[in-house]
Amino acid sequence: MHRIPAHRHCSRQARGFTYLWLLFAIAAASATAAAIGARTSSAVQRDKEAELGARGLEIERAIEAYWTAYKELPRRLEDLVGDRRSGALRRYLRRVYADPFTGQSDWVLITDAEGERIRGVHSRSNAIAFDIRGMPTAPPGVQRRISERIFSFTPAASRPADAASAPPVPQ
Image (cartoon, rainbow, N blue to C red; front, side):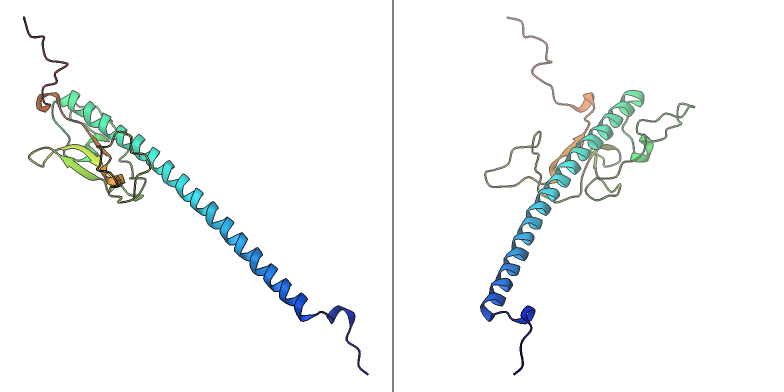
């Protein structure tokens, strides 16, 4: 009579439990990986939104500084990086920053009424924004998009009169 070695002697029921345990372990590991991936993705987007805010404000301030120096808006973002009109090199920006969401300096330009000079920028990204502070309010249930975060400078000559800055009315 032929004997089955002890290490091969295993009931079908025991093999079935091992298989189920292995499937459960793989499912649990997959669920954990998915949860970590979602958290990481959210953290990456929050970092990109923070970087977008910093770069957008930097561009907005550079446009304002350019306006202060020349009383006109720049024609291109590159004008903010190196301007030699006064004889010496003036830099309002270190470089034309890349949009953190696209990885390129492909900002959507906000122009003046004639469409010739740049007042500001916004991202091309259509991703849903996590941070909506400072964005216009939306109707309930409408999610704000990254592209709705606008960084622009409006020269004082074309700003509407502000009630707080208007002279007091004599009584």
